[in-house]
Length: 186
Image 1 (cartoon, rainbow, N blue to C red):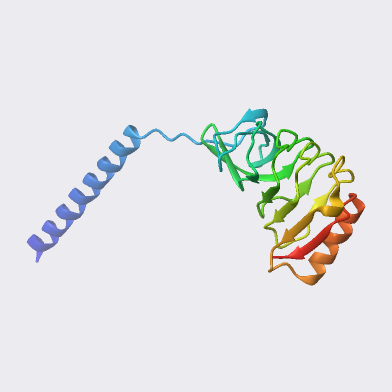
Image 2: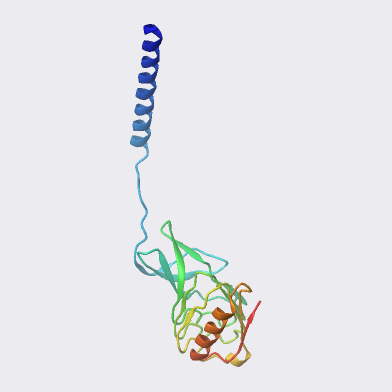
C-alpha cells in the first residue's frame, strides 16, 4: 500500500513539475501584446468592397467615415468594420462630405452599425438615387445631410425587420434633414 501511494505521489509531482515548466516555457516564448483601439484622425483604410476610405478612429473602438477616395463605381457599399493598424473598428458615423468623391454613384449601402449621418454627408453625390440602410433601428440624420441633391427622386430602402414605430421615427428624422423622397422596406 505504501509503495502504491509513493508511486502515485511521485507521478503526481512529476506531472505537476512537467506541466508547470511547460507552461512557464510557453509563457516565456510568447510575449503578450495587447492591441488597443486608439484615437486617430484621417487614417486611410485598406481597400474594402472595392473602395478606400479615410476614417477617424476613437478609443472606444468606433470609427467615423471621413471621405471615400475618388471612385467611378455606380454602387458604393460602406463596410461595417474597418481595420487600422491591426485593430478592428465599428463604423458608426458618416461624416460631412463623406461621399463628395462619389459623383457617379447611383446607390449607397450603409451597414447596420451606422448610428448617425452628419450634415452634408451626401453632398457631391449628384447621381445618387438609392440609399439602403441595413439597420433595424432609426438612425440620426442631421439637417442638411442631403444638401445639393434632388431628394424628390431618391429612395431610401430599409430592412424588412424594422418595426413600424422605428420606420416612422426614421421618416420624421429624414424629413427634418430635408429628405423629400420615398422611404420603403425592401
